[in-house]
Image (cartoon, rainbow, N blue to C red; front, side, top):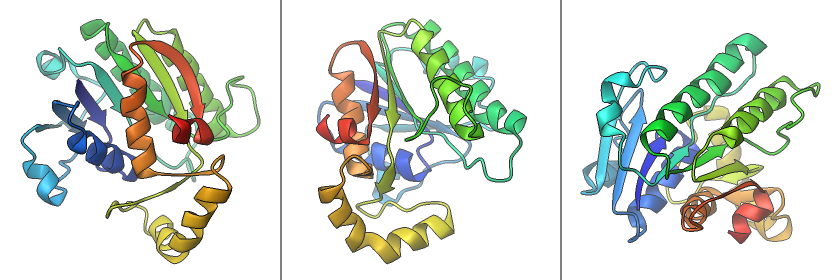
Length: 223
């Protein structure tokens, strides 16, 4: 399969990129983002190509390079802390849907996998702002005519294999509580998963050859 990853410089995206580069059934990986990954040896991987583009809302100039792919793993995300709903929606909803609408036109046989989060509000009317916006994004994506569309809702994600969070406070938490997170994964898989499991699960749902679904943390680990 050939896959596109948006957000490969973030913690989740970096973990997904690693699993794609390791999987023998993934023959080509294209990362699209505002900066290059430069993840050590990953940057020289023969099946990895990177497109660095400042304006991800406008993909028209690179559409020719986005054709012929089987899957998109959309891992772009940001914290809603300190943001207005309008600003958060512009990034989390409008950007995601704009990218997806372009890709479904270019690759209608593609499977699109979107990372939202545990607690996402599918009703779009709850009290929690980020959950409403994520819910609206999920609903919009599920309506698009991709061959396959899957929403991933992980809870706590433990970074493995050298993957780091770009948020220093989060990385401090991961470093300090690493052994406890390992135990929590065994005891509470409904709440804790890993970057490795998320990446492998994404590849697995593409192999389902279509379908639609919402995967919570425990479903991700089962996949």
